[in-house]
Length: 180
Ligand SMILES: CC(C)(COP(=O)(O)OP(=O)(O)OC[C@H]1O[C@@H](n2cnc3c(N)ncnc32)[C@H](O)[C@@H]1OP(=O)(O)O)[C@@H](O)C(=O)NCCC(=O)NCCS
Image 1 (tube, rainbow, N blue to C red):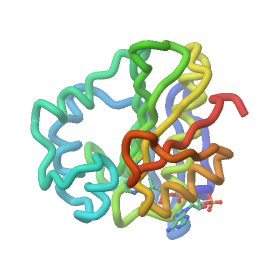
Image 2: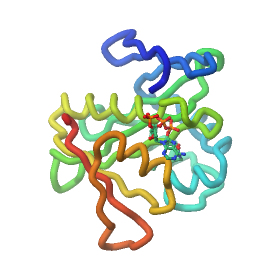
Image 3: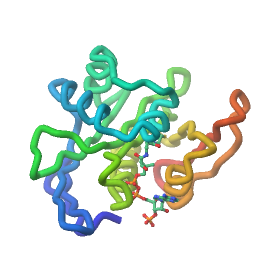
């Protein structure tokens, strides 16, 4: 877990990495789109591919705008903002409610390549699941590449069950109740 995670407000948290970098976890905003595109471009190519399950070198502007426009009902997204680089983004986690079953949502999580392994992915995903639970989401699920040991490890540490994706043998589906 990130060192010294503190709740600063109803939807605002602060964490310190083990080497002392302070970051804030807050809701994403429409004006974050350029920062999201820049963060995506800074990611290692392998991490970009694992996040979107495709080899896009750049996040298209329209997609960035869509990712940054959440309504807090159908979708939720929390992002890490470094205190020493305000306005920049260093990853986060989102939930997107299933179209056919509003009690379920797909999760996605990503952390800046140079900040992995400090507990930021775990804290972002745990927190967005708490928000989702408050809004009536009972279960979350995510498609993960079989080769993605860090994400499969994180899912296991969060108590998710894993099953093969029936439509794609290269993927597994991890799933959990939002309230353990
Ligand atoms: C997957 C990802 C989000 C994890 O974020 P992170 O901040 O590095 O992970 P954390 O530091 O929170 O690790 C949490 C747990 O995950 C596991 N984990 C982390 N790195 C791991 C690794 N390299 N191998 C195996 N397990 C690992 C550990 O069990 C860790 O447990 P702990 O909290 O008890 O120490 C990050 O690696 C990433 O952004 N990857 C690229 C994008 C991606 O794959 N997204 C997932 C798409 S669904």
